[in-house]
Image 1 (tube, rainbow, N blue to C red):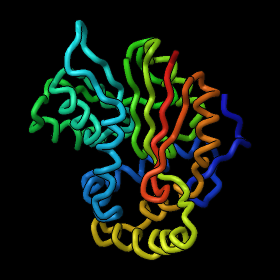
Image 2: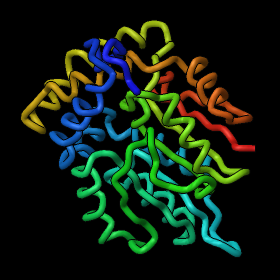
Image 3: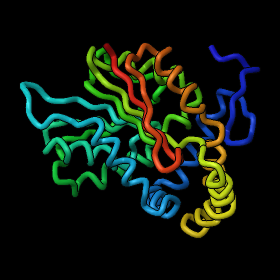
Image 4: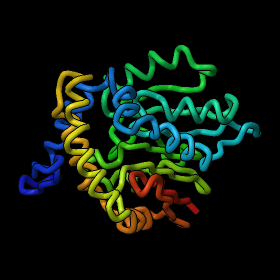
Length: 254
């Protein structure tokens, strides 16, 4: 049971651990309908290349004697799931899971126009307490969502539990820019440009102020590798994208 004195970060704020999920839910409730548009504006569309690289690394099979089962966590709007299904030519079956019902609503509506709409299902669930049996999935993916989970280690433990032996986890997340000079430029852009863009597009800058701050609180790549190993994953590695603006982590359940 969570004790009252336990705290965590909500952006730059220190909040009670049990309060963070509700605050995060409000952020994504407020931006759900414009979430993908804002990603395009904030990254100049480069997030699409990072996501393509993530699915290319996953390399979902296109044939086999049984379906290839993927859990895409925090995948509400469905953009990762659609990529996986298309890459597999409709062979993969993706369970899109998110704790935020508004994000799932957007994704489920969009999925109606996919090339393979029947290959995805949408399930509201908490990453820290997944409602799926042990060894249910061949792969677990999460893109730009793990940093919003209050208990990241618990979510990684759950990912390990629901993966089959031989299954793989892929985590795409914003990271700490480590290119001298570019780090200052990126920080200035994040502080001065992203919240005003958010206000212009969604009517509120606060959700995007939180998202900028949450990136800075996320563990560095070496520490996150260690968290994956602690959860039980083997052959853990990470690949930096675009000067380490984003990092792709991977591990296997051996």
